Length: 411
Image (cartoon, rainbow, N blue to C red; front, side, top):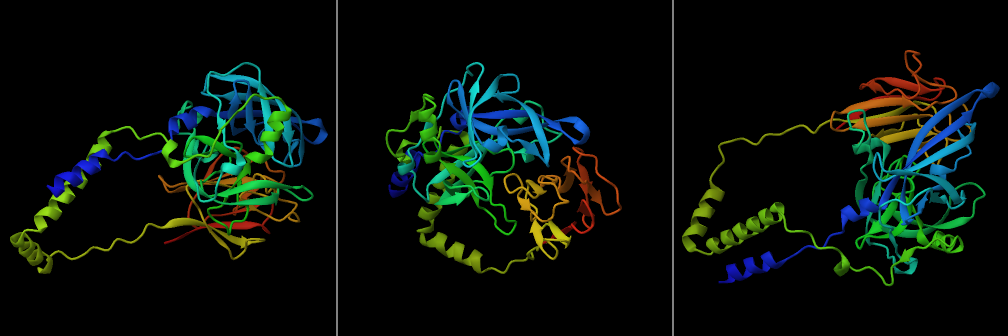
């Protein structure tokens, strides 16, 4: 009887989880086409992207560094075209309504409404540390040549918690702003995307990951208190949550085959416990547990993972494990997650990208139109925008051999 009561209780449980499809529906991809002016008046076009979210049918919030940069790698940007996408073929042109480099926030106004819902913004006083959060956006590492064009417009979701609330400056001479330290992984391309709580309310705008290579698992979002006043001043109609989020407000998980599999597993476990109460069964189990095993244990060596080792320069002697993500190497703390010091002037602000694909265990290096080039140790200069596969033991350098790295491995 107790078994059936316990099984009935398990069947009645319904986990509370966030509405992930709704979070994805709120999030948009922002394509940026920048015209750069180089030496002698030569022009070039640079395509990039970031993330954002709808606060009304005509307004999108993103980062300032996504839409409104005035230069790239030391070259001035003469003009910028913006398009906001909810899918590959559903998009609208946009213009900058307001932006702030100090807050790294911007509000875009769309040329036409998009058929997507607007977010609900959480009041800053109702956001607590330790709360679960979800980051949604379009990290560049998730886009590959093997992906379909349409899949590159499907948002990526990561999960973490709020660590603490801080006041920080985003650059030398910039004022302190309110920011959120959280652990939901973000990478270049996530910039400007929303950070949701379990109720699907936006608690902040994702900004960057910790710039130091020695720091892992720390990511930054701009607190809503830096945004709400600006939206009110701009007279942008927004929705704010009337009260704090609680776990009870989260959407229930729909019953699925996986759910029933788990229930059956629980039921079988309870049956096993009930049977174990039988004296004869206990004796049989005891005998099996004390019988010597005839099949020896196998030991499998752990898979080697790649690391980036500094050979010469600022990171000489250091080793950075490569995640299934991308590492932007350069001097700009706003866009790079492996940051070189300002005095290393030969290295561009966003010099190159190193990507590791855990599925294929391959490492790729790509020059991002740096001023002085990215080179293999053989002296071969990489063509900008073209990924090169690197193997364990390969070396490369930025601008000159005083800033050299090597691909290694460790277990």
